[in-house]
Image (tube, rainbow, N blue to C red; front, side, top):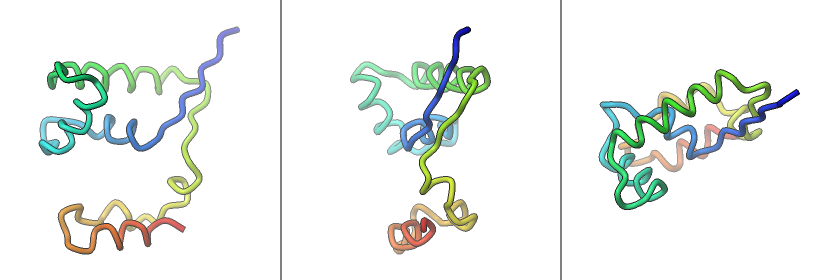
Length: 92
């Protein structure tokens, strides 16, 4: 019987969070990975495919440091001066 294991890392996390409110920096980062001719609709299609893949997966893996991250990590302002320090502190 077929088995599907999906590992979610930083890139997949960024792709899953990509939407109409995403910053230009997020688009630029993803476009580097999808190729120079990648347009927003290509990234949106990849996101939809990833969502479907996750829904159909038998097993989903994530890194331990992400699993054990502090709940406060989601509240950190990415544009704040201390972002890098605060973000790193949120992970054990």
